[in-house]
Image (tube, rainbow, N blue to C red):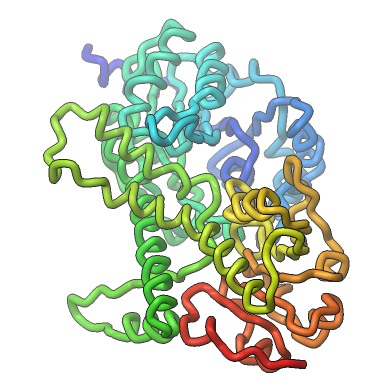
Length: 480
């Protein structure tokens, strides 16, 4: 009996997937676990979370049917309450319960320790895989949902699981990669409606993973491929999005230099539609944040280094993907430069000024503050001698940064107001109330997300600068 036939036989004997474990109770693991638990195809779902000082609080919250994720996540709190009340979901720190399961997924962050050296920090992921390996039983399915360097599933993950369990992947247990494809603010909908990429290390592993994910899909369908192809798909789709954002950001910088409005240009480009025409263009902004886009390019680049063939590419040419990362990383620097230039128009400077930062999260109406572009801006401003206060209605806390909920307190006495996040609360900002709170005749406002109407603020005496607003950034200052 060959390996595939042996695994098929073991899976057949085990029967359908009924009990599932999800390791990593974060933005990916929590909604996934809730949806698995809500399916009538599965009997029980365990969410695994370390009882650590930083995130152990999630265990009790989840077991009460409460979501530890803040910001707007339609339907998540209600679904958690439902599956907990039904007895179909619970969260635990007891990893030995893995032995009771039919399938385990891992949704653990995979940052980079050193992006220039292409060295990922797989420490947390390795710990998670080891925990699975210790309790792995014949016929179980293990799925990596974390975004990883191509070839990780069939090399590092396989090796750790086999070493810890004494079992053989593709012979005694199934192993696959099924990358998450979610965005905060729409987690449940994304899991149900987006197509699911599923890649096993062999045919039986792929089919077992398809069996796991099919019941939670509504509009989405499963797209099967190899594990390595699935890994490349995930890293590449995020890399392409980062590239598209960089293209919009570079265009915004060009439009500023040429004195025109990038949003007019964008609308013009986007208007060209028809058969065979693709002119999709994303939006410029104050920078790219989050866990995925800020590092997935480096996973893809590292995958090429680990490839089996020599890369054929223009000699001495920088990767366009890495260059895109540099452009997007530059946008907080550009926001800093705009702030300094605007203050200079009223004989001010960053040193000694009070800056009110509006928004810390990297995405609107969310508490997701992983790798936010607001952080390097704040660091630069403080290093330049500014007094910086941060407001965010959703982010409760952030290491070494005080996040205020009282926007009036943040705005009071500010020399410059800098909008970093497009939270809905900021779209209704009144120039009159801000001007009164700042107490400045000509307060500075920097819009990094196209949130405010520049003419309203310019007419009220503000010194305005915005990303891509070359048509407004040198406006005459109205004396009040």
